[in-house]
Length: 552
Image 1 (cartoon, one colour):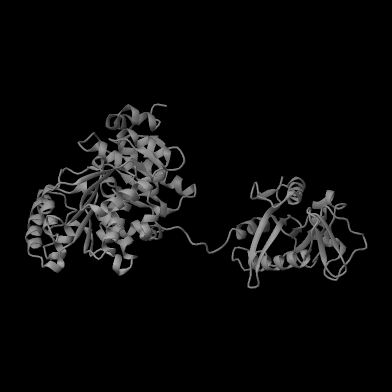
Image 2: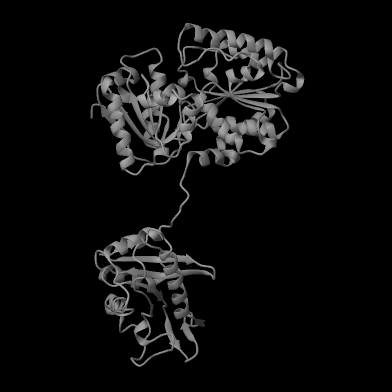
């Protein structure tokens, strides 16, 4: 049976179905038949009813006409089932399409066959033509009528083989290259930057529930939107900031982590000036923008560093916020991943509002992702709004991490591959994770779509990239040619199409369930988990283990 594209085409009528059936049944296993091939040149749009490529012969473009077809000596006429007669031009139609397609193929750099044998035929399964029929542009051999139809492929093969004898025959390689070239060339590749920028009009991708909630906040100035992983909190935070800025407000869009800040900046950078928030980035960098000292290298995790960022810097930011002139204060502040904020951070945030009592404060949070050893609570009353839908993850992924979600969720994501669990010792998990990344790439996943995340020690590649500086490290998140290596603590609010989660903790820690929850929920379509089954059972419980396939 021939190679068919598409496998089950939508054909215009029963006549085309008869031709398709004959072609697929009579062609060889290495031959190619394509239905409804379109091609556009500088003259017009063309459509070839059937394109046939026969190994050892050539390429033939076929125009099919049903009903009764005749020729007056001047015009082609077709009698339709309704009895109506219309003038047609099947020969000119297929000839122009043939030359347009040949030109397209030969300009493709992947086509290495040069000029091969191309021809065209008109197939009229319901009509009969005399053996003596001939037109200046259509000899008898170019027409396949109802008497010729039982040997359709033999006729095609003869035409492809016998015509243009000075040109080479089509090889198996030529058939393969033809199919590749017809898929297009120079295609724009999907990249994460483009995907981020498309959220310029974030309202278009919001679920009905999200849209209702955002519309409701027009009447509210102090709101906390709570939702689980994949519920679209970040999209909503971004859209809320855009809406407020578009209303003429001076807005700050804040978060805690470097990675999420990088993401937010990329999104908002593509907006019009009117829609851009006045400040986008990390809470601590806002203080530095006001004039606070940068402090120690935060990658050096020690008591002095923790004291500076958790206490000294927020205290200095409060002083600076109180001294801000009115023109530098914010009408509203939007905070994504607000559960990451410490108690000491809320005072400078409120002080930075033009009106500390009524200024807008919009928080987006998930208590299940409280992975840091701090527990801050805004010191002002907030109206709680709940997101119940997961729109990020496939059903398979969302079902897997379901036992770690502390409130009911409805999963709206589509179907995808099953979650894969690879059992190994925790100290072998990094090596196993590397193997799984290679397997994903071999399966056709693009590097830009893949992330390896750890729950314990960082991957050596992450350490290397971070040694080049924070900015350079997060630039690699947007690099279309690299797999991203990160830690679940820094990946909150972010996602990848495919994630290899390496559970390399040596023991259960205080925030292990939250870390596992974050890691399991970052993949949109493909999730691979590597780790010690006993440790995962201890962290997440038997229900989670069962859903990951542990013990099957």
